Length: 125
Image (cartoon, rainbow, N blue to C red; front, top):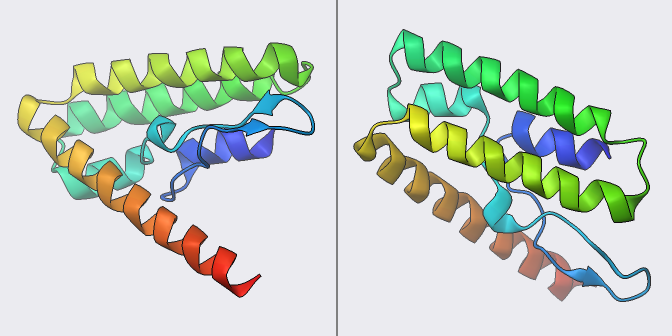
């Protein structure tokens, strides 16, 4: 599932968690969005050690997500959510309390912008 791996590599939020009523499957939640390591380095004022750790963790996480792509969605989706949650926890552990506050604000801003984009798209349909 390319979208799942892209959510870590891009600076845009993932989609909202919702149940697709036709298939019964779920998609990533907005609150599963974590900015790319590159964006965090740029926006949070990370020191070189933090930057290296985040970039390494992001690469490892993206590989774990790619490894799950061949699974059936019923098996894959919960495992991907688990990998994303683990990544978010690791990121929080690398950041200082002040950087974690800045990250929360970054995520909130991105989710708000994403919601606005979604609303504009729905209006034009």
